[in-house]
Image 1 (spheres, rainbow, N blue to C red):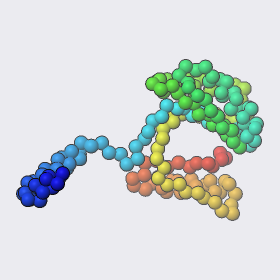
Image 2: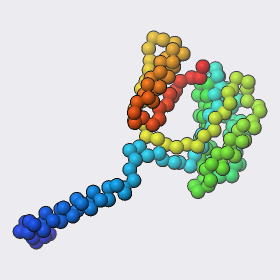
Image 3: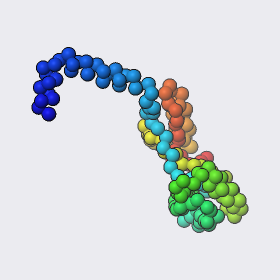
Image 4: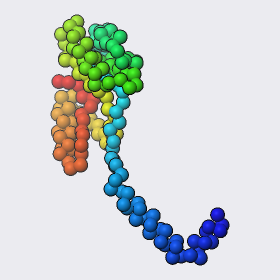
Length: 179
């Protein structure tokens, strides 16, 4: 190593020429490099969400989550099913077997969930979607001495203002109850 350093110190023209070649090679390769600031990562999972307005978590679990789990149980391509019941909402995450056709399994799940006719009347239409992970750049929490409806309207205006900014590709309003 010592000899190599000595050679570059005594042969400055060769050192500079090598540096120019390396920089030029990097600049030539740059346009061919695929770059994304916030790439979307696809995971093998599907999410089913069912709003059940005004229901307590225990009621959501027994009236909605269990029925969704039973309906999709045994569907080909499913590895694991986990559900979460919260106030007024049921969320079911279905992890898929690696290598299956995610769109086909998602359509099968959607068909089975849409066929459930024993949901309570207060439930809204189930939403089935493939999960994709997008890096969160910014989260804004809105709170104040106003009712939830007003706070949600303010959140929607802020969301629309941010979405109108140049360079913003996706904005979502989260954790707001449906009204």
